[in-house]
Amino acid sequence: MIEFQDVRKNYPVRKGLNRVLRGADLLIHPGEKVGILGRNGAGKSTTIRLLSGSELPTSGTVDRRMSVSWPLAFGGAFQGALTGRDNAKCISRIYGRDIEDTLDFVQDFAELGIYFDEPVRTYSSGMAARLAFAISMSIEFDCFLIDEVVHVGDHKFHEKCQVELFEKRADRARVIVSHSEDFVREHCDRAYVLKDGLFRPFDDVDEAIDFHINSMHEKNDAKDIDRTIAAMPSHDPNSIYSPHPSTIRRLDVPQGTQIELHLPPSSFFPECQHRTWLYRPAGYDGSSALPLIVLQDGWWFKADDGPWQTPVVLDNLIADGVIPPVAALLVEPGKANHEHGLASEQRSFEYDSLSDRYVRFLEEEVFPEARKHITIADDPAMRAIGGFGSGGICAFTAAWQRPDVFGQVFSFCGSFVDIRGGGSYPDSIMQTDPKRLRVFLQVGINARPSGRFDGLDWPSGNRAMARALAFKGYDYQLVTGEGDFSHIHGVSILPDVLKWLLR
Image 1 (tube, rainbow, N blue to C red):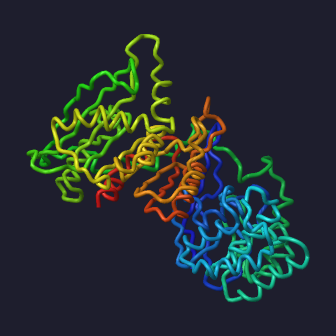
Image 2 (image 1 turned 120 degrees about the horizontal axis):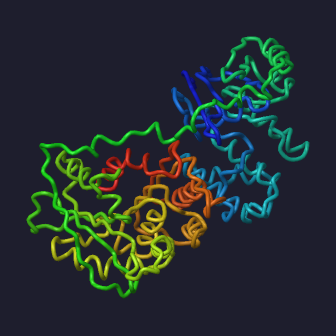
Image 3 (image 1 turned 45 degrees about the vertical axis):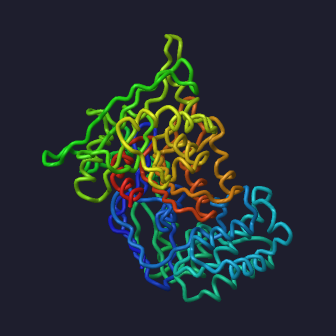
């Protein structure tokens, strides 16, 4: 069963909100064949994304109690640098399918010949659609999603697709979104019409089609009522998140010590100063080695009036016994010793560059100062490094370059985009033997900063990272949220991230 209960889906636009779904209810039972009709812009494709789980509702619940496919013949999730064979392997592994069985089926069904072993970026759109359809059919979903008429390849291949989907899987549920009334009439037992942000149910498909056709001819002053923009201030997509309770200081919890370290002049970043603080847990007597967390943009993560409240979070989690006593280094990017230095450019140079310079700076210049106050665990699996934005990709670079120094990474809205070449990481991961790393990634689906970063896609960059990590068998997590390029979602999940890292 799949059920929408009071689902609302809004998208922020320049002067307000595009309210696509407005408290919609929908129910799909196992084995049902259901059509969804609606004019252009009504929200049909949004519905498909919500059904598949690739997007979350703004409010309301989507309850899935059966497995759901991605839209058939959709190849947008392929990794272009991988061959068709390797993409099939990756998806097979994600869904727990036998890899050899999947490859045999896909290679035979897709009829790509030698191109099955060529990079997908070299495929035509038709070839990519054939591969996507074949992989879809190799996984026995309970419900298949069809966005528009399934017409892949030539007439012969099209007939094969029809047999595979509509005859061999006649017992499966299907949700068909289409402008073709005949296609819906042929393949659906009942239908919904999506109008004014609500689903209107019809047990008779012909009645649904008649209602849909009549509604298309209704006069409306707006070109499309489903795209009416509310005359209100711009919506903040981050407003659905609240700070985690662990960010609040508790009077009964012992407080750790915060020590500002005085680093010597840096040989890695000359003429720069790096303010750095060490968090040492309460009660530490120096007799044992501590796990270590390193955070970039350290002041932001430690400030008493800042959003992250990392020392408070660590105090609370340690007191509750959900993580072991742990030390933290909170490191600021370099600030120039002279008045002509640009802090933003120095930060980008340190954080976005894909070299081992920064991790060597930590190991050779920061760690020795920290060791004057604590003993740091030698095992890289007990050392984590993290950050936000460029600080996130910096954390990954440090661990990627030196997995003997850091074995764990956590990144919030990590800048895995082409600022200083960060968009190349997915390909590098695919082409390199797995390293002993655990990786946590978080990103907001609306994280697309403007200005000099206009055109760079943070959600796509992080999803590409996750696909590459999955393919290579890494222990990783990707958490996507509704927010934009903001810390707010990260603040709400930081305690859970630390528990995952230090489990």
